[in-house]
Amino acid sequence: MNQLLAGCAALVLCAVPALSQEKYTGPRPPKPDIPYLVHASHLIPTEMVEARQEEKKDDSVFVVPGAASPVKTPLAEPAFLMEADKLNPERVDLWRLDTRGGQREIVLSKKAKRNGPRPIRVLVSHIDGRLYRIEVAQTLEPGEYSLSPSDSNQAFCFSVY
Image (cartoon, rainbow, N blue to C red; front, side):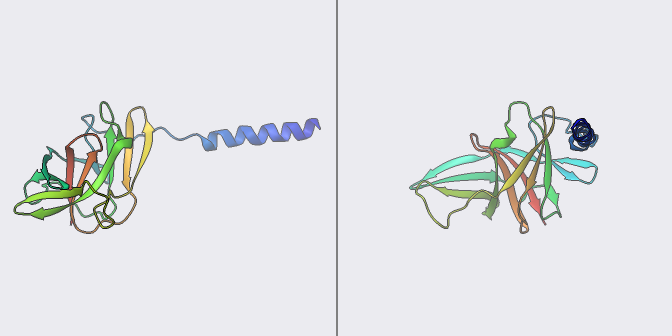
């Protein structure tokens, strides 16, 4: 019986270091509350803008100036790093934006529509301290996108080409 307990204890002691994560040593965002695109060991800040909200009949239209974001990535499944301070990364949604009349926009209906825009699924992982990784959970088509906190009109824009 003692041999069995000693064997189990040894097995547990060997497994504990394997379960613990290594300390993150990669690049860190220089400013908090801004998602940074991860390109190998480089971090590229997303375009930070405040979307203008317009009300139209049964819709809310969110408008971002400019036809395209200056922040571009060739990655169809981009990942972001963010140092959280005031912004909760768990409450950030990813949206595809349409380009119309030299600006980017998304139209959200106040009435439930089956074919209306829906947020694109993202996975949020805590790395350490206030550092989080946000990964897109599906392949993105080329176009304009925005990471936006669900409780504000702040938009962190980028283009996939």
